[in-house]
Image (cartoon, rainbow, N blue to C red):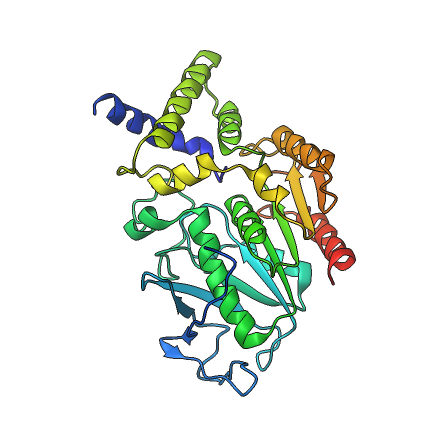
Length: 344
């Protein structure tokens, strides 16, 4: 999955050569910080916002159980108050600050009357420059050691629990694409406070199927492709059968690969009872549209009437959110209409 996955092959082959030669869902009390200082609250628990301490611009912090910091941003519709609805947007698998993801403003259009929450990944801050390189050399080591979908879901749960305590949101909508879709499904399956979930480019039941599908677009000959597919299957088997070891591939460490290759997305979605909208582009070259469709049909055959599925001909992995034209606006309107019918 995920952006430019076919670029990972160089790193993968290096790794193969090396081999040849050698609680989410429960809210707890958390202090909320912004710009390094604790945010004060009024008698209702609402954050008091001053001109010198705007949580629209500065990262807010909560502590993980291990003492490390989760940074997040809360964009209020009204800088002097908050709405009753919280929209959460999750980025994909790239090693970048959430503040520099260009698709966020477009996705935010699905519900402009909500407050917007975005959360940084483990070890990443706004100080990290933006890059679309899959193997960027300045990706923080602490990120490679700790980042994976379950960690992101845990961080998100901690942040949302803090905001529910301080802001009393009555509706929470979670939306994510690619890896962000996986995170959205994880937290929705585990928590009881998500009212609706919107995901796109999430692929089928198993991550390995989507990876092998993406290899078809690598431009390799049939013989080379078959050899690489077999090699990657061996890599996946090695990850799943061995204890943690040092690894950095496609800006991900061992834990990320282990968690992703172990994930059963159909099993996750089967646990969700609230409304879910799954969107998929037919021209997606990172995950398999066929596998995504098969998974949804399987869930619906099992009686999962809470899941809706929209398939878009000629749309890519990001549903054209990164395109220069306005084709993505159709997707935004579809999401807006779906939310209006389901939860708003």
